[in-house]
Image (cartoon, rainbow, N blue to C red; front, side, top):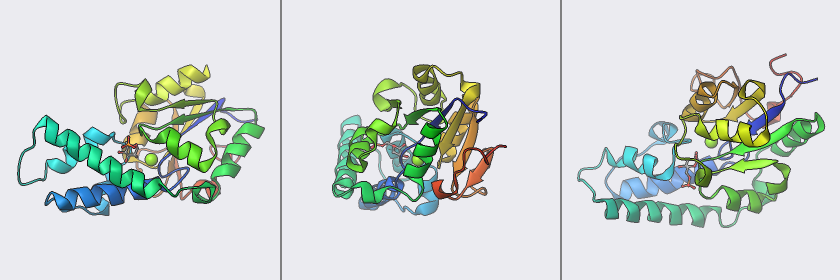
Length: 215
Ligand code: G6P
Ligand code: MG
């Protein structure tokens, strides 16, 4: 029997490698505005909503922007991103993702998705996995982006499970912080050197083993 009653997954960078597409789209935008952009800078954008990410990037720009100019840049980044995800299919699921979702389901646990992306449903549909989640919380349902715990607390509430009985799964520093502030255990996906606040870190969902983790 699992010690958890629900598992709440992040999407980008956990279930599929859209984190890389966000990176490519932001890099194209940042460099067109004269802002240097690399993978290290991108790390702090993971899990941060679109306008919050743009603000972080433009803080390094040589000029200032009006709200209208910022909205136009956010829209442009989203068009770059949508071009990149246009050809996605089930073949873009990361190794172990479907098996992890199936294992959680087989163990009788509830399954949630918590993504601040306004493209989350599009990506879920392209991957063909929307129906594998009992609930999906995206940007439309929350006011505060990660690292605020709101998205994970909303997911737990909609699942009808107490936060303490939830496991959160995240690849972002801000996402792990959100899980911990929500009072949940955090499984990091990636590197333990980056995700220092996570309770446990595995390189990918191909290392996910519900009964073995946190035993
Ligand atoms: C996820 C990603 C972020 C992205 C955010 C908003 O949290 O990790 O990199 O900025 O979603 O995505 P959106 O598709 O709404 O621009
Ligand atoms: Mg992520």
